[in-house]
Length: 236
Length: 236
DNA sequence: GAGTGGTCTAGACCACCAT
DNA sequence: TGGTGGTCTAGACCACTCG
Image 1 (tube, chains in turn cyan, red, blue, yellow):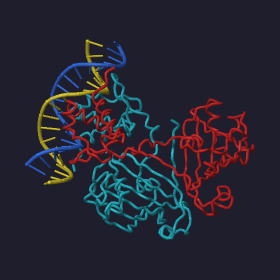
Image 2 (spheres, protein in one colour; image 1 turned 135 degrees about the vertical axis):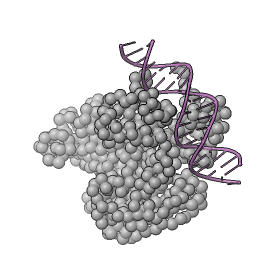
Image 3 (cartoon, rainbow over the protein chains, first blue to last red; image 1 turned 60 degrees about the vertical axis):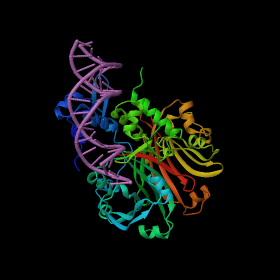
Image 4 (spheres, rainbow over the protein chains, first blue to last red; image 1 turned 180 degrees about the horizontal axis):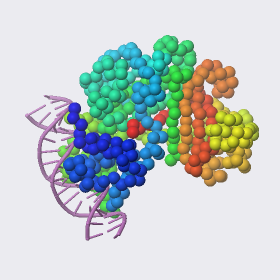
């Protein structure tokens, strides 16, 4: 799986921004200079730059040049992060206990959410995710098989997002959440080691690749004493 | 001011989606066909298509084609909106029942959150907000008196945000939420007309003016059967 | 094997900005 | 006027999907 050139250029420039080699408000080399430097065509350079612009690292001024954004202001937007990534950030030890890993036909509802046809093959996964040996959430995942034909149980015992981004080299774009409160039923409470009727956060998520395709539909039950959402909203 | 071709193509295709000429899950013509149809180069077609993909109108399948997304699920960006505004948008009739309106000294925690000094005067408000006569949430507000010296009970019986933006002419900038699930205690359940131990969404909000000052700190208890949060996150 | 989207090239002309 | 990014072309080869 060879990385495309524009992605190499993109990562190189992003690193130069993060390391401080390109500083806030600095003009980076022009597209023509970058074209020479990386020995590629200008369109390839533009593809790399445009991604960084859409991610907020750079901004352009026609007739002037391309400049580095104030990256401090970015980081406050709500980010899509896998549970693994999130917990690792907090220095927690994660464990994933796989309960089910099956192939099932898509129901109407799942097919609609994942933009596949009814009865198309779906990877169905149930797992419990623990942080420092305390169960935090129960996840039920629906994943279109045709996107991940080499998918294996192991990917859900480690990090599914790592597999997607590193092994498959897909790009994750964004995620839609709904967040509700529910009382745990018998099954949920048992799995999360809480009492029946204890509150849980019930979250549905649909996550998209940068080609516009949803690649997972997830129902999650979070233990209320172990997890909460933080969100920043803007008045627009 | 001539429109670039890719934008004309983009709008044309978007219109065909919105008008229903291209239906959900339909494959649209291939890039080569579109190239012939509009009499432009393939790169121009791709620029138009990629914008529509990033906006969520289309998704692509390498080796298969380009397809129409389920457009109903657009426009989900998280906005700061007062409850009044939000419910009015849904055509609901709002009522606010004011339970308490008092002036109290700031505790350490409240002072820290509102960037005032301990024991500074705080407006303390409790109110129940109903939609179509069903109680939806219990709100407990802490507001720094020094920002609103002319504040009155009436402002909480109608819309506090309206008062801020129209009467005071302040600009609201953004809001930080934390969202948790809790079991309703005796008091909460009674106020929201639910059973004891029923789940509620417990939300804390800190809302800021565009000068960076927090102007309210709010604890809210939402009835789980009446309310949920929707959020869109980006991977950056 | 034929068709699709993904990547890439080596040019070109334009509008905008500074000097 | 010379340099920048914005738009656009007419090709090319690749990887993927499907029959």
